[in-house]
Length: 578
Image 1 (tube, rainbow, N blue to C red):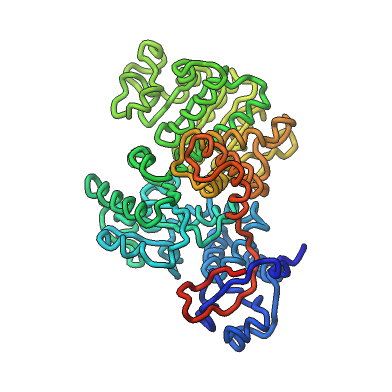
Image 2: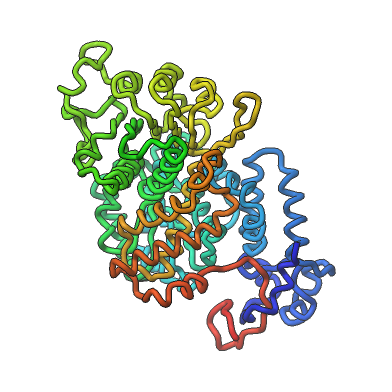
């Protein structure tokens, strides 16, 4: 492997004002043993470091050995979190060079346990905790000059962490992990990324009773007080960074769609649980359809779990079906939406208007119930509607029962089955069970990573429909084009670009999705498509001729660059100079 640290001379030098232990303690500037002798002279590092002058390659090898010695995914997660807080360049070099091994450790599924045990391993500040008692200090907190370079924010309130529920301040693991993937997969510079946790309390009694819980130990604020707090945050973000990209992450279903709708026309914002999940799920469905040969508009879909994620997937699939020539109402009729109270019908109570667009008439489903007045279950839907595609975003482990899947396999030659809930314990079914129940005929996409399954004596790779295929490129395209807003068409453009790059377009025996190791390259392609769409819609602040240059300008590679001393009159800790 080429010694990446030896490419430093091709980079601009960076002016650095820190020295000595302060420089070593800065994760963004620290090089550890890779500080060359002349920089050790310049910044007073002799004695603080061992005498060996190493390279980034050697450091990556050393850290990989230590990581592989860790006994569990959680201890590996904790190890990587510490490394990120010690040396960011080394952390990202490790990720970029070993993305298939690292992705499950820094994000799903391991990040779920990381959030549950966040207070156990919290050591150093990363990102911002904006707690409800400090709501009058938000402007002051955001105003510090260390945040002048921020271009992207991922924010959560910790209420719906994956399928694990309310984790309070522990939910900060999600913005931290998501921002790490903005950099590792999208190439966006770490100094442009800011994870934020809106700490409005928690209703998790285990957290509230824990003496080591790091969050605000108070019942969760809700209603008008919650809305006021979120609005204070948004308005200060808009004033501090008028062109920032704000991504909402892991908000409860009752808030996720509502907050996105409220603010999507006020600033550049999207919700990855709704829009990113929809884009990657739609792309993977189309990949499976490439294998079956049955046109999209002829498919029937059963969607189990019809909150914000389920609705987002359904809406985007319906848009793709309309592109094939079906009117909107006919496209919607291809879907059977099942929520906690069974199939949604025109008599279902408590649904939002946008969910009721997919309600079936009671007259249509008359006779589907196994008992009078009972809920219409997944099995009932499979028996009567005979869906060819089954998508699960219910957060209920084992919700795809053997009986329902075997029933589906009677009617579909190649049943398309996507248990998308994560972490792994919340998956609606395991891939091995699905293959066993369908005689190996199922085309499967999962939310969490699974090992290959055995079918007829051979291994079959299972595609993880990971949002990481979409959101890094989506963010890169938004940042590079300096988009004012995130439109549905921009999200759709990201999905369409992934569809264009699907392996099954040319090989029906290929994996449903490209290798996860290719996601950094995919992000560039998706970023281009998103940027072009932003320009087409008049949302961009650049022209088409500038897009490629802006994309490259916003891509950072984890290599060490040379340092020079900053004049004492300069106020920043580090900036590049030519």
